[in-house]
Image (cartoon, rainbow, N blue to C red; front, side):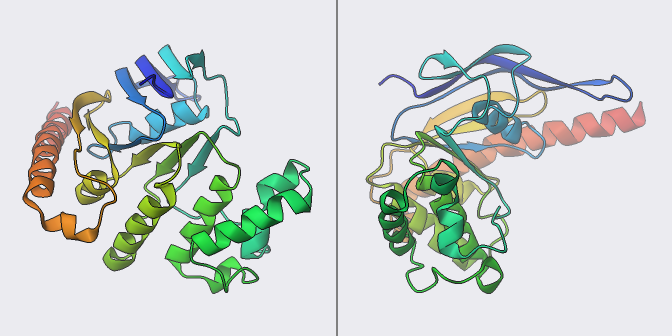
Length: 268
């Protein structure tokens, strides 16, 4: 299958404006996401996971290499890609329905076109009795459901999620993972899910990329051959734990390298 998104030998250097100091964040980064595929991206803190997402979103441009969407260079943000961050990016003065319909309204679409879709989306994300509530009246998990629904109503071809459930408690997080899998089940959206949680990376994804320490690079690529639809019962299966152990071993080795490197710099 042809890739929807590709990063080909991508490197990204950030330059500090005041001092001119340069930091090589990622180097020789290669990954791809196919239509309808969920790909997780894991790795030690500071390895460049969010940089990779920002390159696909068009928030950053590669210093070297190519970031591609449907084989064409990504030149900036676009409606074909939707981004969900760790903190819900909602307008606190708008209701759930108004937040979800913000995109179509800004595009000048007629209410008759987007309101039925919005109401269907509100029911799909389990907020049927909360459409007139404001964000401050919602729990953390409910706010993130609104954030995802606000992106999905625009029908993006690519969904980029940067640790969207990190701030939630363990039980709510699991509920949100199951909910997201259900929402994405009948879609052809290409999904990149960044997470620090290895269970989450395995449970959600068709494939997982594990990044090595800075400069960030792909250390390993693992297929996740768990059947869909998925349920929480899989979390205790032998295959799940085997996949989890493989990723944990790679990340542990990379984290140890990062610690030793930092210690060496302090001694020097």
